[in-house]
Image (cartoon, rainbow, N blue to C red; front, side, top):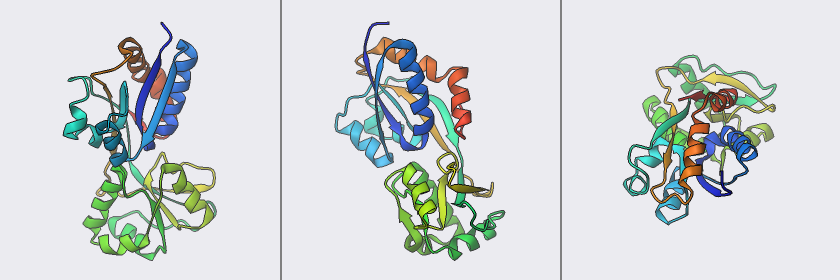
Length: 230
């Protein structure tokens, strides 16, 4: 395969898995991959503003934007991974009850601060959960907005927030204890899709990476990072 540079837009929630898949591909093929991660609005803005990319591995919400969809190859969208929303506390802290919608509501309202990323695809789903529980206004005052997934764990581990509420795979950290997923009645998965850019600068390399990302080897990486492949 000729030397090439591949540019990928990525959703922050899949970063751990995608970083590992990319590293394996680079070693195997001698290709340099440039990853640019962002939240939902940031990814849409990057695409709209002409940030070059050959592939996108992003929350499905990004590809539902009309302007973004115009930049990708029709029919190239494939599902890569999905993850559910859960709750975490600092390691050693009491484990709150989130077993039912009412229990989750009580736990959230009892918390002084909850770390999350409101400006993200996951944040939009969490807002829906708050609305369904009737606590949107209460949680606005309790939410400690973080700039990225890694900062959620930092906020909970440092005591800045009592709870972390986000994708379960993002909450996996040795300093945290996973309380569990939100109740099934409230669960809203975030789905990560890949798409090939219509103006991909290295289409052959892009196709090879797509095959790698959809392979059983990559699926094991995704599963090992707390997400469900496909």
